Length: 506
Image 1 (cartoon, rainbow, N blue to C red):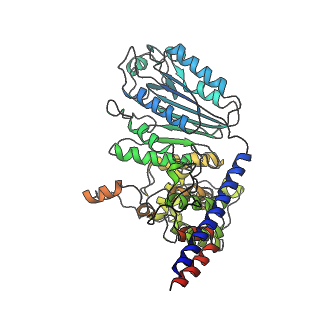
Image 2 (image 1 turned 60 degrees about the vertical axis):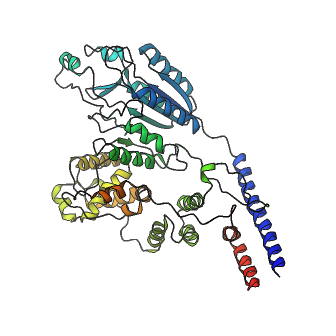
Image 3 (image 1 turned 90 degrees about the vertical axis):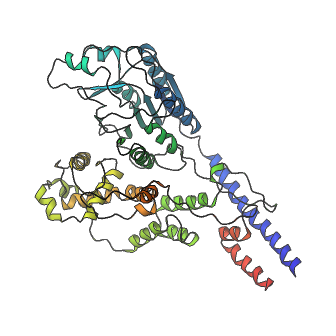
């Protein structure tokens, strides 16, 4: 009898493997039938060997690492290092020529930058700035670069690790002719309202300076960017959220990256989806995976979750729960199913309703927002790319500025205060991005806590826990590849046959 059962088990493994292999090969055939991926072009410049001011140690290391990372995820990279003005302009011209027909344009710059009268300038290594006119003739205005990117309809991403001390601040301040002009410590905020599909990322908040990091190592901002930018199947909004959190913690809450975006929908720096590992006809062997990092139960769970996210169907969320009742996204899946089943409590406000109300302090007070709702408001603004400066529940200047910028994009009265209709509109607009922001956080941080004026400092043990990476789904013991039970579950009906064979053993 044991020989019969064993033989049946081997036969079943072959049937299951053949079926899964057929699915995998058909998926590869379908992928091959699709058009080639959209062309993506990047410009990377790192300037550190300055001739007339102190040299910078990190830009060369940072920019070369970013260029290598971009190449690994499919970008055609134009790169230049320690460039003088003529060479810097030539590189931008080379980049602009390659942008024709590209669907994604990316720029990374590390080095000195200055901000004067709200304009940002990147400094070549031979820069000498003695008066305001030198800004036009001896530097590179970031707007010149952005104009090349915005000539066609595409996704544009600009990343500037250039928020260092302005080495020419005193000379420029003395030479300014107008009282309205000013010299900033860091870079100035760049608006993206008129440039659909653009993201601007600074190493720190506008007007502040960023840390360079120790000699021979990446800056805190670039180190965090390198850590997350190649993660497959993660939107760039989530990538920048993770970068912001890493930099905030690694610098002892001294540096907070700033992001402004008008990208609609999701954009992936590394759109590669995890590949499924399947058993072959030989016991214990496995078909090669297109993505070696994805050969794990966690990757299989992630792929099932992403399928549910893409469709938004309650049935797909139920399928995820059936396969992973205690999975990493299990509670979110239950929330989505419950929300789909619940009747709508309020219809989305009309444009006339939104534009007919102007927010005020008194009107917002009348909403009687709970501490939980205040924190969630800040998180939803952040999810849409409007950085409130934290999610403490206190509506300070950062939150007011974020609300004003959001109101501006909706073309409703700009007050910095919420009305009932605007709250409903903000909730509706941010729902998808907000849920993804929540999903990207460790489980302990997903529950919104009531705000207090000043939270107590965590004890050493708690601090270590706060810095710990999010828990991963626990892999099941494997013996030389996918087990009979795992293959049966994956194929659905095959699992019932396995159960029948198990009964024969008894």
